[in-house]
Amino acid sequence: MKSGAKTPSRETVGTVTVAQVREIAEAKMKDLNANDIEGAMQIILGSARSMGIEVK
Image (tube, rainbow, N blue to C red; front, side, top):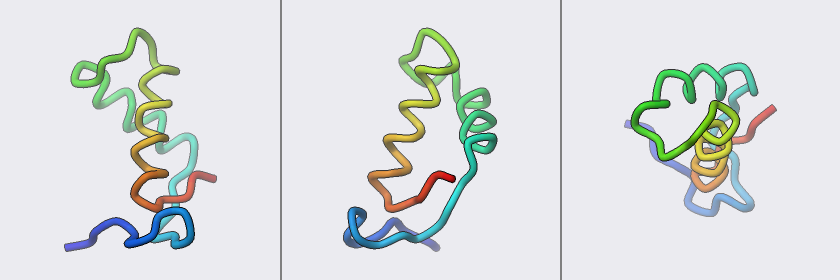
């Protein structure tokens, strides 16, 4: 099982594209506390950053 980075600000464990973030946000939209897809994407981006995932 993969896990997030031990030091997210310095270590990168993977990458995702903005298109992949949008796809994740669309799939999770009903579970997120967001009014629109852009807000949902910001939630996903924040979670990714906190785990050490780089967004390209």
